[in-house]
Length: 192
Image (cartoon, rainbow, N blue to C red; front, side, top):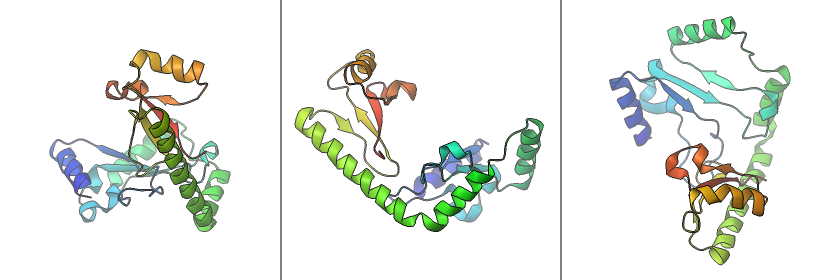
């Protein structure tokens, strides 16, 4: 919460709009508890905040096209609604809305089991790298089912994709897609 308050205070000071992507909000796996930006400073920063979330990650509903855009400020929300209407933005699907509601009302046991699978898979990943490639570094498992795996101790960035994709035949996201700072990383899905 302290870090979020600092970021929001800086954004307010420099008049920067904050768009907070909270789509992994339900994954409290190993780190600190989730804190929504909406809860910081009793709403002091709501006039400069847009929050995105969905049940798509939590309940594997991405193809049902249902997400939430929370815009606390009335004027900013009216601007967004006018823009969305002018561009024929789809407000989601009825099936997505029903599935989201069903997930949150009845999906607790499923989510509990999913989090157990994620923890198990992370442990398996740790053990495999410890045994075969001990200099690989894994990101801490905190609030997502995705793990950044730094292969930089073993190969240069330009060798990673040919090795992972062509030799190992593994589908991953490549760190270079996200930032030059993560060019020696791959991002692996632990929720499978």
